[in-house]
Length: 307
Image (cartoon, rainbow, N blue to C red; front, side):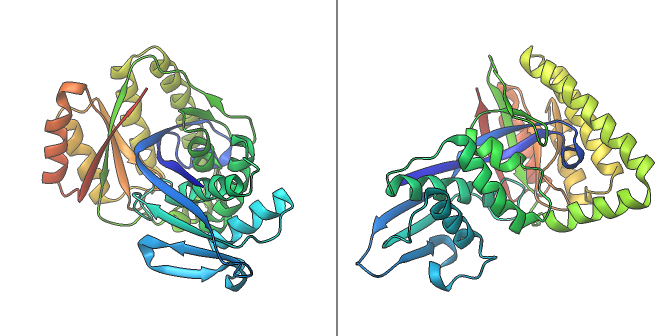
């Protein structure tokens, strides 16, 4: 049984989404995690293989905080199944600690493959909920947006604690994702924002409210195909993320390079403190922006089109 799951980027709404504000996220369909489950010798139990990391371990030997082991246990518990004699192998195109949802993609792909192998396919809601439990191991206090957009594999308007709304996009949304070359420190970034918010609640409440307001405007711009307005809102979102202390000089350099090269808008995506930036580009302008991003220090640039 095989399954796959995409990466994701947050179009608008990082960090404030943890505190009840909305966010918009879209799948990165060109970068995927793939999971395969095959039968093994009777009595062997479940073997977990992270092929890209050259790691192999039996489920019975994994610690409670081992993400793939935790995911497998959650699936088996949900399905009321014992441990199967099988090999679960993970391959992924997604870079780790880059703000592209690699951990959630592994969980979603693995959950689907394992449940399918056991003859009990899971709904998107259940897959997302199981992946969210593993996200807590990765990030401490996640918003839930990564597992949601990856499980549905559709653009979503997300508010923590509410059912996600799948967004209809009638025109292709062309995005460039540029890797800064520095891993995103998600747990540290989220913890830092929380600590600073506790020290200055009024400042952070105001910034989160501003981000939430522009996310709502971004939804309207997206649904009306007003990509110029969407780009300006992405620029404004980045400025607010700078104010709350999650950008870096390298990320700011890439954002500026994309804008100067003709991007309609650009911002960091994900937790910040490393990772990637996101640029909204017109179809004919993408190659120029890609070249500018590499010249500014990007180590990888991926293109994704959301429809």
